[in-house]
Image 1 (tube, rainbow, N blue to C red):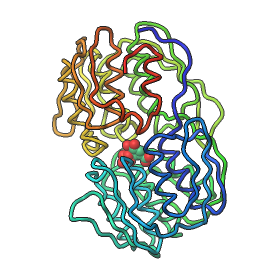
Image 2 (tube, rainbow, N blue to C red):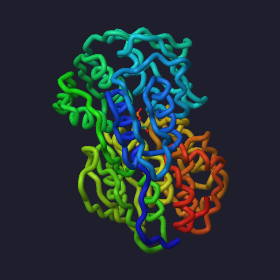
Image 3 (cartoon, rainbow, N blue to C red):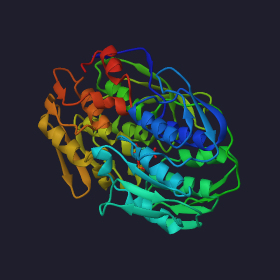
Image 4 (cartoon, rainbow, N blue to C red):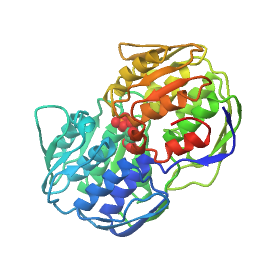
Length: 421
Ligand code: S3P
């Protein structure tokens, strides 16, 4: 396949969720331009409407307008977060500071994902929590006035960090958190600073002080750095040409996968433009490359957590061995990504295994052939569809529709570039 031209990817998922929440908490009308309008973003929109915010329909190509009233109203039924872990976890932090009882739930995949990592510190801050005896959803939370917290997090997770910072924001208390290994994405910190809150980072502790004031806003969401990984993968596997992916978020806590790709032998050009929503933004320019296996250390995992599926399928075609060290968090994503990455690479004729919490991939020049089991996981579907662009590959993905969770238009993009979907 030859690649050429310029394309864009949808708005950033993490930033869209956070802006929707903050807009719903501000008093008055905010505008979010270039929002992600995928199923996950719609889950956030829907729960915020239940909590009393007016949220215009999330439609592709349209800005979303959100009218908040300064505080949430008790909802008349359970809050259903669909497949969206970010919606559920950030929301729990906000609800912890609201004096009413709510039940948060989600689809089958989300109900199985760990929530006690969030509810335990929120309980310590003063919220009352009931789950059904298992570490997942539904969770029933009664919020109220909160205490400050200083918390050593058990996992490096932007959803956990963000949830506690938002609890601090609404509850007007100080929050200090420390991540155990590496650094997760810092969108919440950047946004809170933009409202005048003191958020400091001494390289160890991230400290929030309730010094600011939430105001209405109008911002443009950058293209999603994680979604950009898929066309980057297509360009790297192509036989010729060059692709420009325009308007992508370049937050350093999100672009570490580009650094790993460079270590693998890729040449990725970056042309930086003007910042948007307090985030660096620019174009990525990338073409085919022959890749080599690399070692990815445990500290690197949090800053490329969502790009591991794409990196792993590229590694399966690279020369030599690639190891992702201590990638156990992948077991509790939308699917068991660790197990399914290894088993699907093997099903298609490649060589991969899970050893402890490490993902070990032996690159070969195999012709990927077979059916991929996604368990409805959007990033697995997209990563393996990209692998299907290798010449003479015959890759069938069992559920391509789930790409709509984060990347509406993925299949259209793939077909436009000459792939099958
Ligand atoms: C996200 C954080 C990550 C990531 C998810 C979005 C966020 O999860 O996998 O897609 O917006 O905070 P963890 O923080 O749980 O690793």
